[in-house]
Length: 248
Image (cartoon, rainbow, N blue to C red; front, side):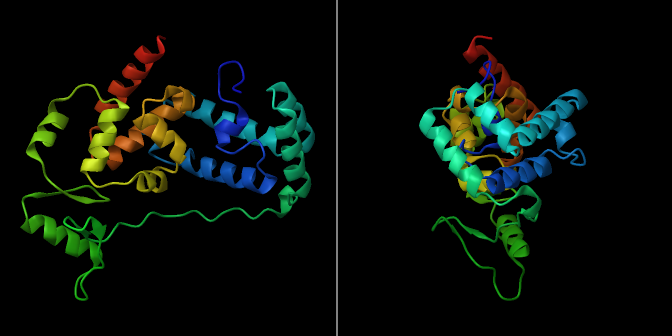
C-alpha cells in the first residue's frame, strides 16, 4: 500500500488507516518529540538535511491525515479498500475535534532496578541502598557480570569475543546480542520510541516491514546504543547489509 515505493503517511506516523484523529495526533506528538530538532541524539544520526527532511515528512503526514477532506482524498490515492475506507470514515466521524485533543505528556524511561541473573527478573532494591547503587555494587563485586544501562547479564567470553571481532551486524546477530544481554523487545520499544513491529522487522531481516532509510538509521543507531555497542560500527554495517540485500 506504499505510495511510489515509499512509506505512506499512515506508516510514517505508525498508525492504522482506521486510526482516529486522536490517535493520529498522539502518534504525531510522539514522533515530533522523538525527532525534535532540540534533541542532540538526532544530529548524531542524521545530517541537518536529513533531519529537516524527516521533520517535514512528519508535518506533511499529520497535515493530511488530520484534515477530513484531505485524508479522504489521500486514502483513495493510495488505494485503500472500500472496507478500509468505510472504517476510516467511521473513525474520523466519531473522533474528537483536533482542537480538543490533549497533547500527551512526555515520558521518561527510568533506570531499571537490580537484575537477578538466576531468576531472570528484576528485583526490588534493598532497603538501605537505591536501585542503581545496588546494581552497581553487584556488578563491581562480581567480575562475571556484565551490564548495560538497562540490564545485567552473565558474561560469556565466547560471545563477547564474537561481538568484538564481528564486522557484519545484521538483524539476526543484533537479536542474539539483545537476548544475551537480557534486554527485551518491549524495553527497546519503550526506550527508543519506535514501533514494536519495526524492531521485530530489524531482528528478522524483514526489509519489507522497515520504514524509510532515514528512519531505519535512527532505529538501528538507538538499538546499538541500548545494547552498549559501537553505534557507528553497527549502523555502517547494518545499512550496508540492508543496501546489498535490497540490491540497491
